[in-house]
Image (cartoon, rainbow, N blue to C red; front, side):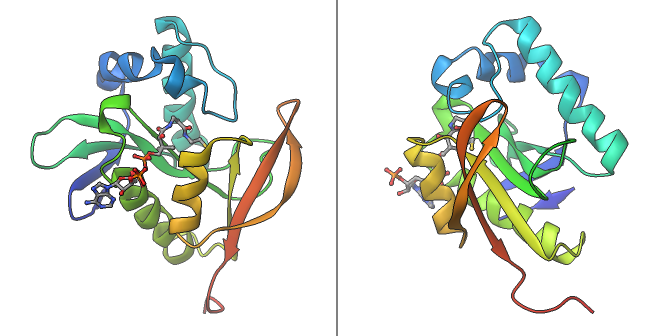
Length: 169
Ligand SMILES: CC(C)(COP(=O)(O)OP(=O)(O)OC[C@H]1O[C@@H](n2cnc3c(N)ncnc32)[C@H](O)[C@@H]1OP(=O)(O)O)[C@@H](O)C(=O)NCCC(=O)NCCS
């Protein structure tokens, strides 16, 4: 569990399904993701199960983001490294009504610190669809730079990232 100024970041659970499915039902949300996913409740269930299962396998995953002031589900963000992913990733995804408030950047910064501090990652990357200007802005705000373009999931995507500032001890 992590805590930022405005967010609690806690493990996703099956109890998040209704909020998660509502978030993913918006084509603007699902359409931004590099890993293509549909907007149906069944698609959302499989996506949620993937993030919960990733924690079981890797010991870390995206957290549920909860607005401290209201207890509302805001989205998900965190470290991510499924098989075939080009490095240790950090990712972010917010329900549409929570865009434009700085929550993604707040969660991304905490996730990045976790990757460097707790996971001792030498480098952290993010895979972003070309044209996803909001996600690119988040990446740049947390200090990522465009590294190169890569093939991922059958598409050409931008690989953003940054190296740890000091060598881990
Ligand atoms: C990508 C995504 C997470 C970005 O969300 P976002 O709300 O634009 O990003 P942030 O949380 O960093 O918010 C930044 C905006 O909040 C504004 N803001 C308002 N209050 C703020 C505050 N207190 N602190 C910081 N920024 C604040 C900023 O000015 C900025 O506004 P702008 O976009 O008009 O310049 C969101 O668009 C999303 O979930 N998209 C669908 C899924 C997706 O594409 N995920 C990424 C896959 S790679």
